[in-house]
Image 1 (tube, one colour):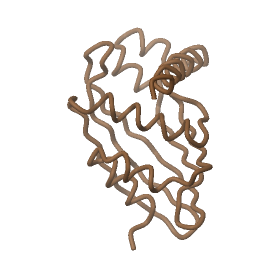
Image 2: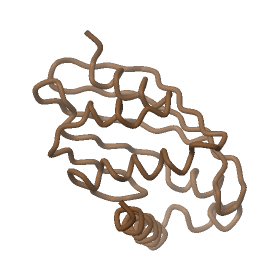
Image 3: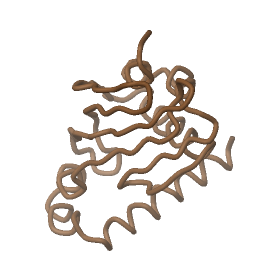
Length: 154
C-alpha cells in the first residue's frame, strides 16, 4: 500500500486535487512560509486555489526522498512554474514533514528558503527583502487575502 506521502505527491504531480485532498484528514493542519498556518477546509481550499491557478500554466511538481512509517514521514518536493505577477521562472525546493493518523495526513509542514524563492519570483527586490520578517508577514497577508477571495467564490 502506498504511503499517504506518495499518494499525495503522485496526485499533486498529476494536478489531481481530489486525489490530493483524499490523503488529508478533515482536521488537517498545514503550515508553510507563504500562507502561515491553515486548518481543515481552509488548508484544502489553499490547494484547490493553487491548482486551479496552474491548470493552463507551465506548472510541474516532482518529489523524491520519501521516508515514512505509519505515524509520520518526510519528502522533498520541487515546484517549477512561472510566477504570474512578474512572469519570472521559479524552481522552489521544499522539505515536507507530515504526521499521519488512521492512514490520513493530519499535519503537513512545508519549509523552503523564502529569500531564494523571492529572488526567483521578484528579482533583485526579492533578493534584498525576501528573508525579512516584514516580507514574510506581507506575503502571508497577500496569500491569505487571495484565499479569502477564492473561498468567497466557492
